[in-house]
Length: 165
Image 1 (cartoon, rainbow, N blue to C red):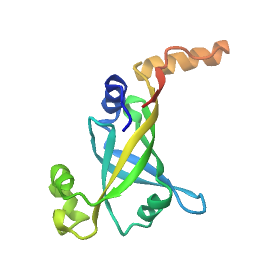
Image 2: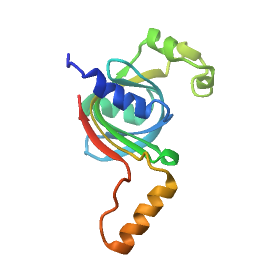
Image 3: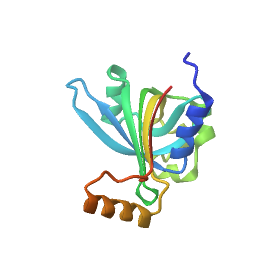
């Protein structure tokens, strides 16, 4: 089992914890990449991102042969963008499903945690890259306008980093 830096993991978890939707990208046997939005349920303390899915979705079968995935998160209102690379597993885990369950999920899984199609995807974070702007929109606009006039790269548009776990 890989040892994670709790500070690195906390940094990524803090950035994505309030971004509800992630675009999960998988590849099939032909190496064709496809993405779909999934609702993030949790980023746990061990570096896993959890999603509820139907095991009848075609892309869940792709995970068996191609478990490497990417999950992209974006909060355009806060100028936050995070790209997570990881290893995905499709699981039937009743205890975890009960822990994460909320009543809104009944729209997709009418049988609740006993729904025969209900599965979980657990993505183990391996690395992440992020772009996080702490500057206000007005300050970002000012920096870009200044750069357009001076021909110099804009400064102070935010933080960019990479975390390898």
